[in-house]
Length: 118
Image (tube, rainbow, N blue to C red):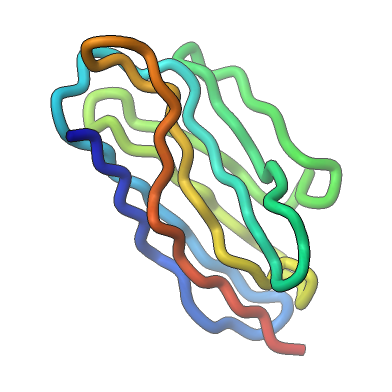
């Protein structure tokens, strides 16, 4: 059973930083893309950043220059360093992975709350 477990969320003042981590486990043969999405109250879930197994990254325009996604392939873990946080970054952040077990599938973590106060 594949599990994605996020950590590192919390409450921070505007301008501050947080680092999210997402550890994957459970019968994994290979991982393709990993990423972070977020969902604010009353809004749809949106892409924040993704990273391929080869290290290619993609960011939402709203976080470019402030957030950095990275991964440790040996640990099957993905990170999101968030700097210069703004109140509009407040959301539940979800880890995503395209993972091979017996077949390729898309998996999600349970989410971690990030709250940025003004």
